Amino acid sequence: MPIRKIASIGHPVLRQPARPLSRQELLTPAMQALIDDLIATMRDADGAGLAAPQIYEPVQICAIEVRDNPRYPYKPPIPLTVLVNPVLTPQVDETFDNYEGCLSVPNLRGLVPRYLAVRVSAWDRHGEPLDFVARGITAGTYQHEVDHLRGVLFVDRVRDPRSLCTWQEFDRHHRAAFVERVHEIVARWGS
Ligand code: ZN
Image 1: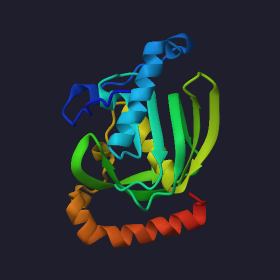
Image 2: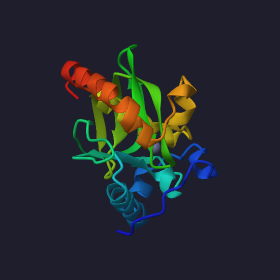
Image 3: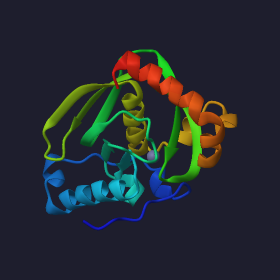
Image 4: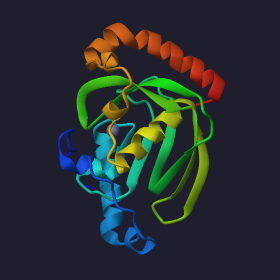
């Protein structure tokens, strides 16, 4: 399970829509090895998620996992989830402003509006159907990763560019207020 290089903003692979997979292709040893590499690379980089285009593979696969994450210590835990050909459908009109970062956008964070509940329809890594609703902060994580499969980065969705900040300035000036909001959302939405 080699750790792969992560593409940075500016590389065209991050801007092209990823292609969907057939079950037959998903089950090939090459595609299963890619999924293992995606998970290993996400964990090595302390990502809350990683999408295949971020490791230069423009296919519709992403992985999400949150457990004691040093980059996002306030995020509620998410068990390891691999999504193939995912489709998200908002379940509410209400959004929250999520302070996001991205392994492909080094040392930058910004406020992005995200739906507070989305239905997730996808396959798992074995081609079995997944269908569930992601809520709260966790819903934001899903929307960020699936955006990668459409060629969209969080900076595209930042409504006010004045919210952009380095990780150090986030910690100094924005973190406390944001973590307070996160706790309110988790209390209300359970995740
Ligand atoms: Zn990202």
